[in-house]
Amino acid sequence: MEIGIDSFAAMFSGNSSKSISDTDALAQLLERIEQADRIGLDIFGIGEHHRKGFLDSAPTLILAAAAARTKQIRLTSAVTVLSAADPVRVFQNFATLDLISNGRAEMVVGRGSFIEAFPLFGYNLQDYDELFAEKLDLLLKIRDNEFVTWAGKFRPALKNQPVYPRPQQDPFPIWLGVGGTPESFVRAGTLGLPLMVAIIGGETHRFRPLVDLYREAGKKAGHQPEKLKVGVHSLGYVANTTQEAMDGFYPGYAEAMTKVGKERGWPPMTRGRFEAQAGPEGALLVGSAGEVAEKILRHSDALGGISRLTFQMDTAELPHEKLLESIEIIGARVKPLVQNKKNKDQAKETEVHK
Image (cartoon, rainbow, N blue to C red):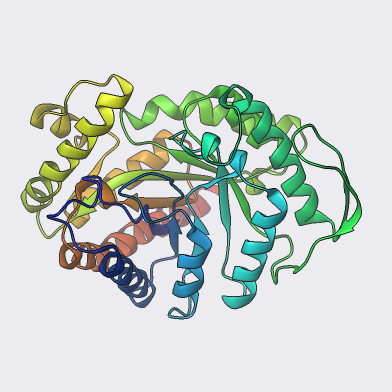
């Protein structure tokens, strides 16, 4: 299983006077990506938002800067808001990133959890799903063909038009990022795209029926099981002890979730609700290395096996030094615990089938 980090380059307080400057925040983010690379994590993702408090409106620029400072870690979006973007430019940007990084780029495409990109780029929110379906179709055609002939509703047609540059990887990895809409899971399965599921609340096992829909749709479309990868994006934070992790993460997390909740009609976040989310069945990956590793394995079992797990720690607005420490713990302790347990389970399964 791949283990990594996602970041929204975010200060949910809106980069208020108590926050560091945006210049320093981006410099620190690049340090954290370097740390993740040094400690052996597999993936680092940068989101895309177009609102105050987020510095990730141009994720490929951040990832390109990271590519020049790292050696092994794969670099991805988390997610690219494809509905409000031009698929040609999206592909060109990520193909260029792939060349700069020597074949370490990926993208996760989705519709995003906020809606600011639609009016900003001149799109109608009523076309929410139709926009995404059409643009995903074009993006996949560009990925698979150097010369593209295509026609749609929201963009001028292409007639045997070449798109350059071409990435180093062939095919270029494109994941589909989803929330909780059954149609999105079926779409990913039908297209044979790996799936990245954002599980930021509730109980992880409740997503199993949706993941099963994905796998069933993929099988029905004729895709091999190994092609139908499932990844999970979770809010989390790992410290030396569970108490340290809980006490460190809660204040900022509660402030951020309460703020977002006002926009979406959620109740204020309380310590009790937080502890329930961080409990054995809850979605939050907050605790000590051993506790979090065991929870990742439970998440994997609950979903019928996952290929990738990424931590999103921005929510709590933790100090840079604490985030660096957490990344080191995840790479040096959590990842080996998860992989050792997976290897032992695979060895037992092999023995059973002998």
